[in-house]
Amino acid sequence: MNLFVNYGVATFYDAPNYEDYCTTEITSKDYSTEEACEKTGGLWNEAPRIKETVPRDEIQESWCDEEYTCAKDYGVVKDVYNRDVFIILIIAGIISILVGFFATQAEAVSIGLSFGGLLSLIIGTMRYWSGMDDYLRFIILGVALAILIWIGVKKLKD
Image 1 (tube, rainbow, N blue to C red):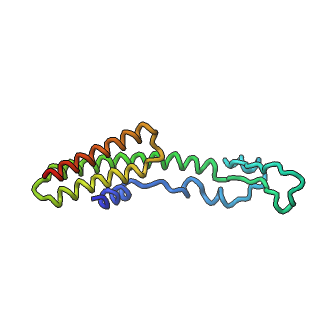
Image 2 (cartoon, one colour):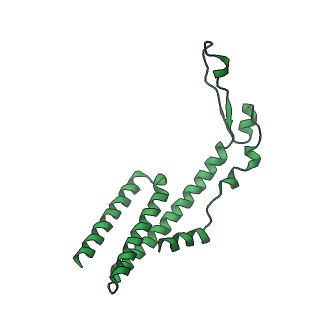
Image 3 (cartoon, rainbow, N blue to C red):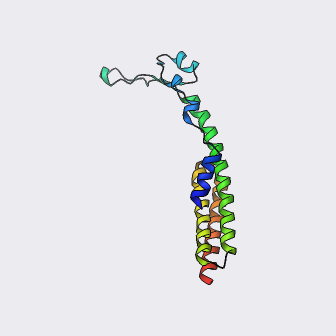
């Protein structure tokens, strides 16, 4: 069930590609000045001031993070994608758990669908965990705990 749902998501909902945002055209150039770096959306990192007693070969140089802006743009798009996949997996997981709960004629199918749905909830949550705020994390963990208790009581009672 989980392979089917995840492969379906990958088939019908394309993930954003890092290379579409940070092209080799940006990353292959030499940005040796602050102006050249910032002109293409990079972030110039100034070398820290070092005392005169440090040997010359240990002095750090300033450098350009040429992927600063494009990586930030990619991160925003990737967060939206992970949120959408999270919603799809949560819906699929809840449907699977409900079908597993009501499929009482075949115990193995019932348990398989219930735990498959739970796994879908876990996978979806892991994908979007870093994008969630603390309240949503708390709610998700509470719902997952309630589902686990519910499945355990139902399956052990039967």
